[in-house]
Amino acid sequence: MASEEQHSGDAAYRQYLPDLTTPRFTTMQTQDAHEYAKAFKEGGVPPWLHGLYLHWQKLYQEPFKGITNDGRVRPDLFRLQDEGMPITAIVSAANTLLSHLTPSQHALLTHHIDSPEWRTWSNPEFLLSPKGLRLDTLPAPTRTAALALLSATLSPEGYAKALAAMRINGFLGTLVRAPRVLNEHSYNLALFGTPSATQPWGFSFYGHHLCLNVFLHQTQVVIAPWFTGAEPNVVDDPAAAHAGTRILQEEERLGLRLMQALRHLCGAYRDNRVVPYEGVVVGEMEEGEKELVRGILREYLLYLPERAREIRMGEVERWFGETYFCWIGGYGEDDAFYYRIQSPVVIVEFDHHSGVFLTNKEPAKFHIHTLLRMPNGGDYGMALRPLIPGIEQEYLWEGERE
Image (cartoon, rainbow, N blue to C red; front, side, top):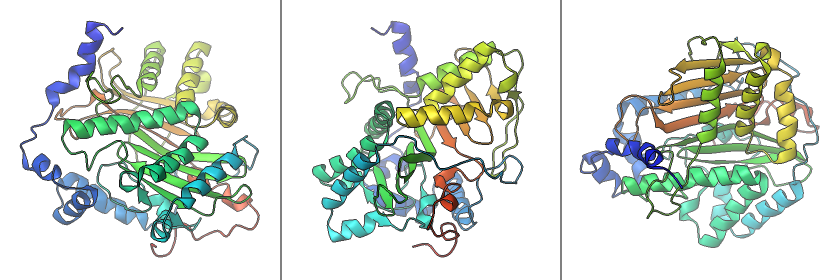
């Protein structure tokens, strides 16, 4: 049973609940997702986010290169291998979903394996790229089939984590009284390629605070880039649906334990396409500190089924000599902070944020963003694609949008 102190901590965000009588919320409460997105794109409010959206549109025109630490992509970091993915079950789940669709829904859901739309996922609540099918517009049997594809692909723990993010998003929609924009199923699913046990294909599942990009080839999987967040990070209302749901607490706890165990502080952080290495080299840490790093990485690899997770963990550990842990912020129990673990084959980030829907102007522990990327071309399985016989290259990131 939670203590009074824990309840108080869980409810700390409530002092920052917004005024729902302001135009932002009274208007949002009358709109569905498409109306809300249209108003945002045409009205440019809030301007800081609209400016970011315009910047994203510009970045989208650039050919894909991949995140690097110095602007140069390191070759030969990734290889084709058997990772034990239950590909037959995943393909069956995808085909079951397709069997539920009308011809128009099928056309909306499916894209070429090399479609540039892979890159148009985003995590704000605005439906910036309406590709694929939005779950909250689907009949219940079709929505169930879509979630079954996610369940068949992810580990049981990873699927539970994804559901928790979705449920907290629904709770946020209740808090701001805008359930047509923010709800448990306000997510889009887009399919790339033809579901196959032998040929590459994949899907993107994305929306507010949950974005998963999945590339599959035979029994191998890449789940990157992905983004998971929450505002607030717990359903604290005992009368709410899914009361007690909490997310990202282990990533937070382990990161703080690691920083408290270290004897040195890490350097400052600046994040863009080229992300320099900063901080403490993991390979030079004490064994207990390395184990905390392993614990953090296991949490970030949780979406992968067990065998794929173990293989990926081994690959990441092999680069501990070139893996850096960077921290910004305080390291007391109540302090907000940011950390990054970065190597040639993985980048994970944890960030406490200021409010977007809540009104806290400073970063707080009840608004969390996390993400994982595979640098040096690993995202979207791009580094693997040239290794697959018979797969055309140099289309995915070039040419006109569909």
